[in-house]
Image (cartoon, rainbow, N blue to C red; front, side, top):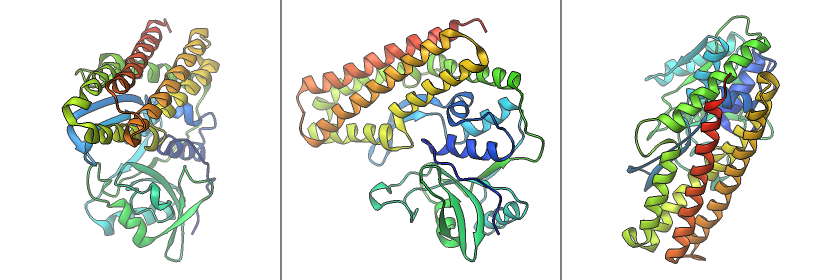
Length: 337
């Protein structure tokens, strides 16, 4: 059994899955940057008192699942989204979905994905892939970060759908519900503007000092103190955590900024505002600085760097990023749509 479905490789798992599912259901205009931007995927949060893999909780994107939910809502597309406590019911619903001719998005854990190189596997439960058929005991898998479709046995798929730990997927499955999903350009324009406004709110106005652009500044202040407060080794491990979340979780800090820059470039076709094109360059600039900061952090972790001046340089990069992103989102906020 195989659903009519075209595999597409993409930069980030959730926006890649959304793009493939929506294109498959008739939304011809959708691209990965448009899905990411309409779903207000860009975010930043640093929560020092929550630990993941022995390091502070850091995220460069919005909570898993929200990009799909927001994008479909903005485009007026009804969705099916379910979680399960029973593995048997989760597999039965997946079979039922495939039998109805629908590819299904699934949230999974990375650690037991057998087709991933071993060095890429770690305990992260917010990866996304598409199941589009079954041959014998093998499920046909479209993983957006893979060049070609792949397979998982029924046991392997069950294991990753019910991975334990933070952000446990609990068999989560999602896909567009039945209906005519063709979208006109005016609907796209409104969805794009809605996504931009939502991203402005979550980067500039979210309460708390540890999230949005304020959170980037807040992280910089902590980094300046880490060498003396934590010691060289633990401070290096914390910076390694930042690099892992920045560069290895999906597309991380720099990559997400590049996707958002591409979103603004593509949005210009629908909103016809030249300011939007100009601001896309600011997010590319921020992306470059995130990548530069990752090299600095890796240098400290590897022991090539280690003085207080090196930690201060790392913090300075984040302060500059916060300034660029704050100014860019304020400029987006000031546009009279």
